[in-house]
Length: 131
Length: 310
Image (cartoon, rainbow over all chains, first blue to last red; front, side):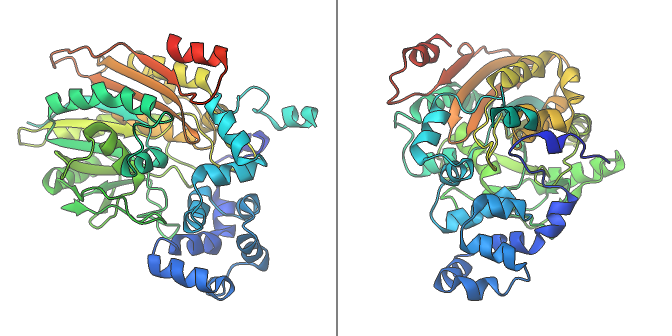
C-alpha cells in the first residue's frame, strides 16, 4: 500500500497510519471536548486537563499555544483539532485563516473571490519556485 | 418491493447548518446558496420518499480513533444530533428504519460488503445539514433515514470504485426488501475544499465542473480516479466526493440529471448539488442548471458578471 505522491502536495498532511499513531492521544483529547462538562474543566485549568492524556510535551505545548499547524504536524487531525477551535468559540474559517498565515479579512476575501486556485498549488516544486 | 427512485448529491458544510440554525439564510452571503436549494425542497416534497439512505462521513463525532469502520450502517430506531463542540444542532432527532436497515446489513454482508452494524449513534452535521437543505426546518423530519457512514478521515478511505460497487449492492439490498417503499439515496460531502494547513481554502472549479459533468452520464471515468488526484486537485477534504459514487452506483445506469447547482463559497468549501432520477419516474424538469459565486461587498465587475452569467 502506497502513500507515494502525497508528500509532494504542498501545505497538506496526509492523515495516514503513522500520523494516526503519533497523534492518537492528542486527537482523543480533542474528542473529549465534545462534552460540555469537559469543555468547562479544560477551560478552568488547561494544563491539568491535558495531563490526563499521555501526549508528548511538544503536542501539549502546541495545544496550549493554539499552534494549529503545529498540532497537525504532530499527528493532529483537522476534524479533531476543529473541536478545540469550537471549544474556543472560533469558526472553522477562523482557524483556516490562521493556518494559512492570512488575516481573517484576507482569507474571507480570498474565499469570496473563488478560493485558492489549484494553479501553482499542486506540487511542492511550485511553492519552492515561488520562494 | 422497495425501490430506489432518486438520488441527491450535496455538500454538507457545517457553516450551512449554523446559518440555518442562527436564522441567517436571508443574509447576502448565504441567500444565493439557499436560493439554489429552493427547487430541490419543492421536488423532494412532491417525491415524498418513505426512506432516505444518507451516505455521509462522520467527522470524529460518533466514531473516534478508537474504532474506524470503513462502511457503517445505522440500524437504530433513532439517531440524536451530536454535540460537535458547540452544542448539538437544534434539529429533530432522526428516525431510523431498523427493519430495512437490518435487512440491508444482512444483504450487503452476504453480498460481500462487510458492513459495521451500528445500533447506537449520534449524527453530526454530515447527516443533518443535507436534511436541513432538502427539508428545511420541520418539527419532525418527514422521512425515515438510514445513515451509511464512510470513513474519509483516516487514510485510506475506500476507493471510488469500491464505493460505486457498494452502491450497486445497496440497490440489490433495497430491491430484495419485501415491502412497498420509495427510497431516495443521498451522497454527501465535497466538493473541492481543503480545511487544513497552509493550502487551506483551495477551490478547483474546473475539477468540480468536470466531476459534475461526468457524474451522471459517465461515472465509469470517475470511479478510477486515484485518491491522490482528489487530494491534489480538489483539496485534502475533496476526497469526500467518493461518497457521491455510492449514490451513483445505486441508481440506474441511465438515470437522468434533473437539477444542478454549484456555488462558491460556503465558508471554506465549494458547494455542489445534483438531483438524479431513475427513468421509471415521471420526469419533472426543475429550473435550469445554476451556478453562482456569492460576492457581497465586493465591487469587482468581473466577479459580479460571473455571478449573474452563470
